[in-house]
Length: 109
Image (cartoon, rainbow, N blue to C red; front, side):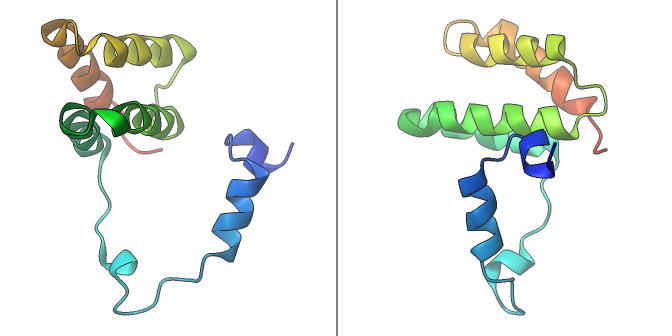
């Protein structure tokens, strides 16, 4: 199994990433600080709240990142996070603590 298949990256995504020019000094991409999972969750929640048309994509991106980076990531945890993100609009008081718990106990691998 190749690395891009193991990470869920499609061949098209891998090709696009490979063709992307490397970041140069002075390039904005090279100067952005890393964002931890709790902060990434805050950003995803903000996008879901303010840009409904981009909300699902933001949620899916965060779920993917959590699955890749969380030391304790499991299928059960991924299902729990997916259900919580889906329920966020209907039951924010129940969903937010679940997501916060998953994000905060997920140090980078």
